Length: 75
Length: 298
Ligand SMILES: Cc1ncc(C[n+]2csc(CCOP(=O)(O)OP(=O)(O)O)c2C)c(N)n1
Ligand code: SF4
Ligand code: SF4
Ligand code: SF4
Ligand SMILES: [Mg+2]
Image (cartoon, rainbow over all chains, first blue to last red):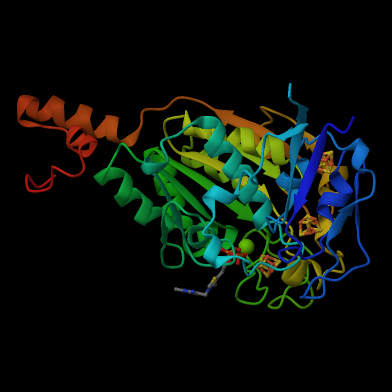
Protein backbone atom coordinates (compact mmCIF):
# COMPACT_ATOMS: atom_id res chain seq x y z
CA UNK A 1 0.00 0.00 0.00
CA UNK A 2 1.13 3.53 -0.68
CA UNK A 3 2.50 4.96 2.57
CA UNK A 4 2.86 8.53 1.50
CA UNK A 5 2.13 11.10 -1.14
CA UNK A 6 3.14 14.59 -2.17
CA UNK A 7 1.34 17.82 -2.92
CA UNK A 8 2.80 20.02 -5.62
CA UNK A 9 2.11 23.70 -6.20
CA UNK A 10 3.11 23.66 -9.84
CA UNK A 11 2.98 27.44 -10.23
CA UNK A 12 5.60 27.98 -7.51
CA UNK A 13 8.07 25.48 -8.96
CA UNK A 14 11.24 26.73 -10.67
CA UNK A 15 12.35 23.34 -11.93
CA UNK A 16 15.59 23.11 -9.94
CA UNK A 17 15.37 19.32 -9.61
CA UNK A 18 16.38 19.18 -5.92
CA UNK A 19 13.28 17.15 -5.03
CA UNK A 20 13.85 14.69 -7.84
CA UNK A 21 17.52 14.18 -7.03
CA UNK A 22 17.23 13.77 -3.27
CA UNK A 23 14.06 11.72 -2.95
CA UNK A 24 15.46 8.56 -1.33
CA UNK A 25 13.21 6.24 -3.33
CA UNK A 26 13.25 8.13 -6.65
CA UNK A 27 9.51 8.73 -6.67
CA UNK A 28 9.67 11.94 -8.70
CA UNK A 29 10.71 13.14 -12.14
CA UNK A 30 10.43 16.53 -13.80
CA UNK A 31 7.46 16.40 -16.13
CA UNK A 32 7.55 17.49 -19.74
CA UNK A 33 4.66 19.89 -19.04
CA UNK A 34 5.35 23.57 -18.40
CA UNK A 35 3.94 25.82 -15.72
CA UNK A 36 2.97 29.33 -16.69
CA UNK A 37 6.54 30.63 -16.10
CA UNK A 38 7.98 27.95 -18.37
CA UNK A 39 9.43 25.65 -15.74
CA UNK A 40 8.95 21.87 -15.66
CA UNK A 41 7.42 20.94 -12.30
CA UNK A 42 7.89 17.45 -10.86
CA UNK A 43 5.31 14.69 -10.88
CA UNK A 44 5.19 11.27 -9.26
CA UNK A 45 6.45 8.49 -11.48
CA UNK A 46 6.57 5.80 -8.77
CA UNK A 47 3.85 6.86 -6.33
CA UNK A 48 3.81 3.42 -4.69
CA UNK A 49 7.37 4.06 -3.47
CA UNK A 50 6.58 7.27 -1.61
CA UNK A 51 7.03 7.03 2.16
CA UNK A 52 5.79 10.54 2.84
CA UNK A 53 9.16 11.38 4.40
CA UNK A 54 8.93 15.01 3.19
CA UNK A 55 12.60 15.22 2.26
CA UNK A 56 11.43 16.72 -1.04
CA UNK A 57 9.67 19.38 1.04
CA UNK A 58 12.79 20.10 3.06
CA UNK A 59 14.87 20.53 -0.08
CA UNK A 60 12.46 22.54 -2.22
CA UNK A 61 13.77 26.14 -2.19
CA UNK A 62 10.49 27.38 -3.61
CA UNK A 63 8.13 25.77 -1.07
CA UNK A 64 6.42 24.09 -4.04
CA UNK A 65 6.28 20.46 -2.89
CA UNK A 66 5.83 18.58 0.34
CA UNK A 67 5.32 14.99 1.35
CA UNK A 68 2.86 13.57 3.82
CA UNK A 69 2.07 10.22 5.31
CA UNK A 70 -1.00 8.23 4.39
CA UNK A 71 -2.38 5.98 7.10
CA UNK A 72 -5.22 3.52 6.85
CA UNK A 73 -7.93 4.73 9.19
CA UNK A 74 -10.34 2.32 10.88
CA UNK A 75 -13.40 3.43 8.97
CA UNK B 1 -10.17 5.01 3.58
CA UNK B 2 -6.90 6.86 3.69
CA UNK B 3 -6.28 9.82 5.87
CA UNK B 4 -3.96 12.75 5.31
CA UNK B 5 -1.85 13.50 8.37
CA UNK B 6 0.19 16.43 7.08
CA UNK B 7 -2.16 18.35 4.86
CA UNK B 8 -0.06 21.51 4.72
CA UNK B 9 3.56 22.14 3.96
CA UNK B 10 5.22 22.61 7.39
CA UNK B 11 6.92 25.80 6.17
CA UNK B 12 3.71 27.40 4.94
CA UNK B 13 2.43 28.81 8.27
CA UNK B 14 5.74 30.70 8.61
CA UNK B 15 5.55 32.38 5.20
CA UNK B 16 3.90 35.61 4.16
CA UNK B 17 1.84 33.95 1.44
CA UNK B 18 1.03 37.26 -0.24
CA UNK B 19 4.75 37.75 -0.93
CA UNK B 20 5.15 34.39 -2.67
CA UNK B 21 6.58 33.48 -5.10
CA UNK B 22 9.85 34.82 -3.72
CA UNK B 23 12.48 36.53 -5.86
CA UNK B 24 15.21 33.93 -5.39
CA UNK B 25 16.55 32.38 -8.59
CA UNK B 26 15.91 28.79 -9.67
CA UNK B 27 18.32 26.57 -7.73
CA UNK B 28 19.19 29.24 -5.15
CA UNK B 29 19.69 27.61 -1.77
CA UNK B 30 18.29 30.32 0.50
CA UNK B 31 14.75 28.88 0.41
CA UNK B 32 16.09 25.48 1.45
CA UNK B 33 17.60 27.02 4.60
CA UNK B 34 14.18 28.50 5.37
CA UNK B 35 12.68 25.00 5.29
CA UNK B 36 15.16 23.81 7.90
CA UNK B 37 14.52 26.92 9.97
CA UNK B 38 10.77 26.27 9.90
CA UNK B 39 11.32 22.69 11.10
CA UNK B 40 13.54 24.02 13.91
CA UNK B 41 10.84 26.46 14.99
CA UNK B 42 8.32 23.62 15.10
CA UNK B 43 10.54 21.10 16.85
CA UNK B 44 11.93 23.51 19.44
CA UNK B 45 8.39 24.59 20.36
CA UNK B 46 9.60 28.15 20.87
CA UNK B 47 6.86 30.66 21.56
CA UNK B 48 6.47 32.31 18.15
CA UNK B 49 5.36 35.54 19.79
CA UNK B 50 8.81 35.70 21.31
CA UNK B 51 10.88 35.13 18.19
CA UNK B 52 12.29 38.04 16.23
CA UNK B 53 14.15 37.69 12.94
CA UNK B 54 16.62 40.36 11.93
CA UNK B 55 18.20 40.51 8.49
CA UNK B 56 20.56 42.90 6.78
CA UNK B 57 20.59 43.59 3.05
CA UNK B 58 21.21 41.09 0.28
CA UNK B 59 19.45 38.13 -1.29
CA UNK B 60 19.61 36.42 2.11
CA UNK B 61 18.37 39.58 3.76
CA UNK B 62 15.02 38.97 2.07
CA UNK B 63 14.36 36.16 4.54
CA UNK B 64 13.10 38.62 7.15
CA UNK B 65 10.53 39.96 4.71
CA UNK B 66 9.24 36.54 3.77
CA UNK B 67 8.82 35.13 7.27
CA UNK B 68 5.54 35.68 9.06
CA UNK B 69 7.18 36.42 12.39
CA UNK B 70 8.23 39.68 14.00
CA UNK B 71 10.88 40.46 11.48
CA UNK B 72 13.14 43.40 10.72
CA UNK B 73 14.84 44.06 7.43
CA UNK B 74 17.53 46.48 8.57
CA UNK B 75 20.34 48.30 6.78
CA UNK B 76 23.35 46.65 5.20
CA UNK B 77 25.70 45.19 7.81
CA UNK B 78 23.67 46.40 10.77
CA UNK B 79 21.55 43.37 11.56
CA UNK B 80 23.65 42.55 14.62
CA UNK B 81 23.57 46.01 16.23
CA UNK B 82 19.82 46.10 15.64
CA UNK B 83 19.45 42.62 17.14
CA UNK B 84 21.66 43.59 20.09
CA UNK B 85 19.33 46.46 20.89
CA UNK B 86 16.29 44.23 20.63
CA UNK B 87 17.78 41.59 22.89
CA UNK B 88 18.89 44.10 25.51
CA UNK B 89 15.53 45.86 25.58
CA UNK B 90 13.57 42.63 25.67
CA UNK B 91 15.69 39.78 26.98
CA UNK B 92 12.80 37.31 26.83
CA UNK B 93 12.93 37.38 23.02
CA UNK B 94 14.73 34.76 20.98
CA UNK B 95 16.56 37.02 18.57
CA UNK B 96 17.67 35.39 15.32
CA UNK B 97 19.96 37.16 12.87
CA UNK B 98 19.53 35.69 9.39
CA UNK B 99 21.83 37.24 6.80
CA UNK B 100 24.47 36.82 4.13
CA UNK B 101 28.22 36.35 4.29
CA UNK B 102 28.88 39.83 2.93
CA UNK B 103 26.43 41.49 5.27
CA UNK B 104 27.77 39.70 8.37
CA UNK B 105 31.49 39.51 7.62
CA UNK B 106 32.32 42.43 5.32
CA UNK B 107 30.46 45.63 6.15
CA UNK B 108 29.09 44.06 9.35
CA UNK B 109 32.20 42.15 10.37
CA UNK B 110 33.11 44.39 13.26
CA UNK B 111 29.65 44.05 14.78
CA UNK B 112 29.84 40.29 14.52
CA UNK B 113 33.15 39.93 16.32
CA UNK B 114 32.07 42.23 19.14
CA UNK B 115 28.74 40.49 19.61
CA UNK B 116 30.66 37.20 19.84
CA UNK B 117 33.18 38.75 22.24
CA UNK B 118 30.37 39.92 24.49
CA UNK B 119 28.67 36.55 24.09
CA UNK B 120 25.33 38.24 23.72
CA UNK B 121 22.48 35.78 23.33
CA UNK B 122 21.88 36.02 19.56
CA UNK B 123 21.38 33.13 17.15
CA UNK B 124 23.18 34.04 13.96
CA UNK B 125 22.45 32.12 10.76
CA UNK B 126 24.81 33.05 7.94
CA UNK B 127 23.89 31.91 4.45
CA UNK B 128 27.30 31.76 2.82
CA UNK B 129 27.12 31.77 -0.97
CA UNK B 130 30.74 32.96 -1.17
CA UNK B 131 29.79 36.20 -2.92
CA UNK B 132 27.94 39.51 -2.77
CA UNK B 133 25.04 38.13 -4.74
CA UNK B 134 22.38 40.81 -4.73
CA UNK B 135 24.68 43.53 -6.04
CA UNK B 136 26.04 41.54 -8.96
CA UNK B 137 28.65 39.03 -7.81
CA UNK B 138 31.48 41.07 -6.32
CA UNK B 139 34.30 39.46 -4.30
CA UNK B 140 33.38 38.94 -0.66
CA UNK B 141 35.74 38.25 2.25
CA UNK B 142 34.49 34.65 1.92
CA UNK B 143 35.21 34.18 -1.79
CA UNK B 144 37.77 31.38 -2.07
CA UNK B 145 41.07 31.81 -3.89
CA UNK B 146 41.09 31.62 -7.69
CA UNK B 147 37.32 32.08 -8.03
CA UNK B 148 36.29 34.50 -10.76
CA UNK B 149 34.02 37.35 -9.67
CA UNK B 150 32.84 40.62 -11.19
CA UNK B 151 35.60 42.44 -9.33
CA UNK B 152 38.23 39.72 -9.80
CA UNK B 153 38.13 38.81 -13.49
CA UNK B 154 41.50 37.04 -13.23
CA UNK B 155 40.57 35.22 -10.05
CA UNK B 156 40.62 36.14 -6.37
CA UNK B 157 44.10 36.19 -4.86
CA UNK B 158 43.40 37.55 -1.39
CA UNK B 159 42.88 35.03 1.43
CA UNK B 160 39.32 34.37 2.57
CA UNK B 161 37.96 34.34 6.11
CA UNK B 162 37.38 30.98 7.76
CA UNK B 163 34.04 31.88 9.37
CA UNK B 164 33.87 29.19 12.09
CA UNK B 165 37.44 29.99 13.19
CA UNK B 166 36.67 33.69 13.27
CA UNK B 167 33.47 33.20 15.28
CA UNK B 168 35.18 30.90 17.77
CA UNK B 169 38.22 33.14 18.21
CA UNK B 170 35.95 36.11 18.85
CA UNK B 171 34.11 34.21 21.59
CA UNK B 172 31.04 32.43 20.19
CA UNK B 173 29.46 29.80 22.46
CA UNK B 174 28.21 27.64 19.62
CA UNK B 175 29.62 27.25 16.12
CA UNK B 176 28.42 24.88 13.39
CA UNK B 177 28.62 24.62 9.64
CA UNK B 178 26.34 22.76 7.25
CA UNK B 179 25.45 23.03 3.60
CA UNK B 180 22.02 23.17 2.00
CA UNK B 181 22.46 19.48 1.24
CA UNK B 182 22.38 18.81 5.03
CA UNK B 183 18.76 19.82 5.57
CA UNK B 184 18.17 17.64 8.63
CA UNK B 185 21.46 18.43 10.37
CA UNK B 186 20.95 22.12 9.68
CA UNK B 187 17.46 21.95 11.21
CA UNK B 188 18.87 20.18 14.27
CA UNK B 189 21.53 22.86 14.78
CA UNK B 190 18.94 25.61 14.36
CA UNK B 191 16.81 23.86 16.96
CA UNK B 192 19.75 23.39 19.29
CA UNK B 193 20.68 27.06 19.37
CA UNK B 194 17.23 27.98 20.68
CA UNK B 195 18.17 26.06 23.82
CA UNK B 196 21.68 27.49 24.00
CA UNK B 197 22.42 30.72 25.81
CA UNK B 198 25.03 33.02 24.35
CA UNK B 199 26.28 33.94 20.90
CA UNK B 200 25.52 31.10 18.48
CA UNK B 201 26.74 30.95 14.92
CA UNK B 202 25.59 28.63 12.15
CA UNK B 203 27.17 28.91 8.72
CA UNK B 204 25.24 27.35 5.84
CA UNK B 205 26.97 27.00 2.49
CA UNK B 206 24.40 27.67 -0.17
CA UNK B 207 24.34 27.68 -3.98
CA UNK B 208 24.28 30.92 -5.94
CA UNK B 209 24.06 29.63 -9.49
CA UNK B 210 23.42 33.06 -10.95
CA UNK B 211 26.27 35.18 -9.65
CA UNK B 212 28.90 32.83 -8.24
CA UNK B 213 28.69 29.56 -10.12
CA UNK B 214 27.97 30.82 -13.63
CA UNK B 215 31.21 32.80 -13.85
CA UNK B 216 33.13 29.84 -12.46
CA UNK B 217 31.54 27.26 -14.75
CA UNK B 218 30.20 25.40 -11.74
CA UNK B 219 26.82 24.56 -13.22
CA UNK B 220 23.45 25.14 -11.64
CA UNK B 221 22.03 24.85 -8.14
CA UNK B 222 21.63 21.10 -8.41
CA UNK B 223 25.30 20.75 -9.41
CA UNK B 224 26.27 22.67 -6.27
CA UNK B 225 24.07 20.39 -4.16
CA UNK B 226 25.70 17.30 -5.65
CA UNK B 227 29.11 18.87 -5.03
CA UNK B 228 28.20 19.41 -1.37
CA UNK B 229 27.02 15.82 -1.09
CA UNK B 230 30.22 14.44 -2.57
CA UNK B 231 32.75 16.77 -0.98
CA UNK B 232 31.43 17.25 2.55
CA UNK B 233 32.86 15.42 5.51
CA UNK B 234 31.20 15.55 8.91
CA UNK B 235 33.72 16.17 11.68
CA UNK B 236 31.91 17.23 14.83
CA UNK B 237 34.33 18.91 17.18
CA UNK B 238 36.90 19.55 14.44
CA UNK B 239 39.36 22.31 15.35
CA UNK B 240 37.98 25.33 13.53
CA UNK B 241 41.47 26.24 12.34
CA UNK B 242 41.24 23.22 10.07
CA UNK B 243 37.91 23.95 8.40
CA UNK B 244 38.81 26.76 6.01
CA UNK B 245 37.19 26.45 2.58
CA UNK B 246 38.80 26.27 -0.82
CA UNK B 247 37.20 26.63 -4.24
CA UNK B 248 37.01 22.92 -5.08
CA UNK B 249 38.20 21.09 -1.99
CA UNK B 250 36.66 19.25 0.92
CA UNK B 251 33.95 20.95 2.97
CA UNK B 252 34.21 20.08 6.64
CA UNK B 253 30.77 20.25 8.25
CA UNK B 254 29.52 19.62 11.76
CA UNK B 255 29.18 21.22 15.15
CA UNK B 256 32.60 22.56 16.00
CA UNK B 257 32.06 24.51 19.22
CA UNK B 258 29.54 24.10 22.04
CA UNK B 259 30.84 25.72 25.22
CA UNK B 260 29.56 27.80 28.09
CA UNK B 261 30.78 31.33 28.63
CA UNK B 262 29.03 33.99 30.73
CA UNK B 263 26.44 35.82 28.68
CA UNK B 264 26.51 39.59 28.27
CA UNK B 265 23.45 40.39 30.41
CA UNK B 266 24.66 38.14 33.23
CA UNK B 267 28.02 39.88 33.18
CA UNK B 268 26.30 43.25 33.24
CA UNK B 269 24.04 42.27 36.12
CA UNK B 270 26.91 40.80 38.14
CA UNK B 271 29.06 43.90 37.69
CA UNK B 272 26.34 46.38 38.53
CA UNK B 273 25.08 44.34 41.46
CA UNK B 274 28.61 44.04 42.78
CA UNK B 275 29.09 47.77 42.51
CA UNK B 276 25.60 49.08 43.33
CA UNK B 277 23.96 46.37 45.43
CA UNK B 278 20.20 46.86 45.80
CA UNK B 279 20.31 50.10 43.87
CA UNK B 280 20.64 48.08 40.69
CA UNK B 281 17.37 46.70 39.32
CA UNK B 282 17.56 44.43 36.30
CA UNK B 283 14.93 45.30 33.74
CA UNK B 284 14.54 41.68 32.61
CA UNK B 285 11.46 41.28 34.77
CA UNK B 286 9.79 44.24 33.20
CA UNK B 287 10.44 42.79 29.79
CA UNK B 288 8.44 39.76 30.87
CA UNK B 289 5.45 42.12 30.82
CA UNK B 290 6.21 44.21 27.74
CA UNK B 291 2.80 45.89 27.68
CA UNK B 292 2.80 47.32 31.19
CA UNK B 293 6.30 48.73 31.47
CA UNK B 294 8.01 51.55 29.74
CA UNK B 295 7.59 54.59 31.88
CA UNK B 296 10.15 53.48 34.46
CA UNK B 297 12.74 54.12 31.83
CA UNK B 298 13.98 50.54 31.41
C1 LIG C 1 25.70 50.85 3.07
C2 LIG C 1 25.52 49.96 1.91
N1 LIG C 1 26.59 49.61 1.17
C3 LIG C 1 26.45 48.79 0.13
C4 LIG C 1 25.21 48.32 -0.22
C5 LIG C 1 25.07 47.42 -1.42
N2 LIG C 1 24.86 46.04 -1.07
C6 LIG C 1 23.62 45.51 -0.97
S1 LIG C 1 23.62 43.86 -0.63
C7 LIG C 1 25.33 43.85 -0.63
C8 LIG C 1 26.09 42.58 -0.42
C9 LIG C 1 25.27 41.43 -0.02
O1 LIG C 1 26.06 40.29 0.12
P1 LIG C 1 25.63 39.17 1.13
O2 LIG C 1 25.41 39.72 2.47
O3 LIG C 1 26.61 38.06 1.00
O4 LIG C 1 24.18 38.74 0.60
P2 LIG C 1 23.75 37.82 -0.62
O5 LIG C 1 23.09 38.74 -1.60
O6 LIG C 1 24.96 37.17 -1.15
O7 LIG C 1 22.79 36.85 0.00
C10 LIG C 1 25.86 45.11 -0.89
C11 LIG C 1 27.30 45.39 -0.98
C12 LIG C 1 24.11 48.71 0.55
N3 LIG C 1 22.88 48.25 0.29
N4 LIG C 1 24.28 49.54 1.60
S1 SF4 D 1 7.80 12.39 0.50
FE1 SF4 D 1 9.82 11.38 0.56
S2 SF4 D 1 9.51 9.49 -0.62
FE2 SF4 D 1 7.76 10.84 -1.11
S3 SF4 D 1 8.42 11.95 -2.95
FE3 SF4 D 1 9.01 13.23 -1.19
S4 SF4 D 1 11.14 12.65 -0.76
FE4 SF4 D 1 10.26 11.02 -2.06
S1 SF4 E 1 12.56 21.24 -5.53
FE1 SF4 E 1 10.76 22.56 -5.71
S2 SF4 E 1 11.29 24.14 -7.23
FE2 SF4 E 1 12.78 22.45 -7.41
S3 SF4 E 1 11.91 21.11 -9.01
FE3 SF4 E 1 11.20 20.30 -7.05
S4 SF4 E 1 9.21 21.32 -6.72
FE4 SF4 E 1 10.25 22.46 -8.32
S1 SF4 F 1 21.58 35.94 -7.14
FE1 SF4 F 1 22.35 34.08 -6.15
S2 SF4 F 1 21.88 34.32 -3.95
FE2 SF4 F 1 20.66 35.84 -5.09
S3 SF4 F 1 18.68 34.84 -5.43
FE3 SF4 F 1 19.93 34.44 -7.24
S4 SF4 F 1 20.95 32.49 -6.83
FE4 SF4 F 1 20.16 33.24 -4.86
MG1 LIG G 1 26.56 36.32 -0.07
